[in-house]
Length: 465
Image (cartoon, rainbow, N blue to C red):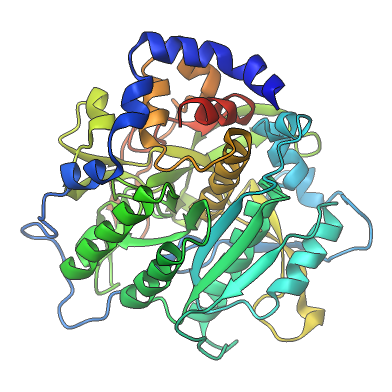
């Protein structure tokens, strides 16, 4: 593994050290990020705050889940689905082999980086009753080793109701999160922590259990809601918990949302311009969405642009916080408040990832291969990348935003670490139109710093993270 550092990391360390940023990336106490950024202004004048209503997180596959059937589960390993070589007008899709090739994860596997010895924590709500059989079929289909998977429900499970669209949506989210964190870091252990519902208090309780019991190295959160819709007391408690997690050198990731620069209003009757929590917390790395263009069979990378699919009323979440001041690591972006996302990853529906799922049904015969879109898949895959980096580093990375933004301050290094997304915007085209943010060179509120060149950024984070 030293060969990985020698090949990809030596120039990074030299350049970052020369800029005086290596120390800045690691020397600030974890609690400083939270204390420095919090304003205490949980709501702003005129924001559509819900009164007397229980606020809930929405899974990042959306309130109207973004998935389509791709085909049936077969007995052959690495089969080719029609969506991998689509006819005009059909949806495209990618399997683990193609995504790993497009982002350079396959190059790391050749050096033995598989996530071995590290643990990924996935926090979700409700349950996926067919999860274990789905994961087993996914592994067989795509020639992956079976994971060590532990499922924890600290506050008890809500009995699964296949007629409840909310629970079925979360079942899809859970399956996607587990299968695709595993696809990137196939030898990492996975701990799935289930909240009994998607109420904010229940999600926070499940996350607190994961942090208090120190369950893993990195936590993936593929859900969110507008900052203005979360009760200020719970939002403050969440921020305090995240600071505690960072103090334990846990890395926190969260999807930035699937409604572009918009979020559902607190009464869920419309949309308004807002950033999503928990992605907007300064201790969290927010993961936005792109539309990846790659060869459907080999995964050879072609290009990317901001995820925006008006046909599906969907796009990559991003915007400016009304709660947190701009943290120190975003100083170079000249922002007054925290901007999200920090990074991005493929999230397109037309160009989604393949997932084996029982569709929330208790009948094994209903298991199928689906195309999933949404920023849902980005958070667990970035969690997989963090696990690979922690394996290389031989310990946890903790909060990684300082390291990510430090890399971006050196242009010649930045271009080796990220695919800079410079095309598109995240304007929301739905029942109402919510103007978004344009992509541009460097960081922007539509795609963050860009998507990863994993073979370079994983060793770079191991060096300075």
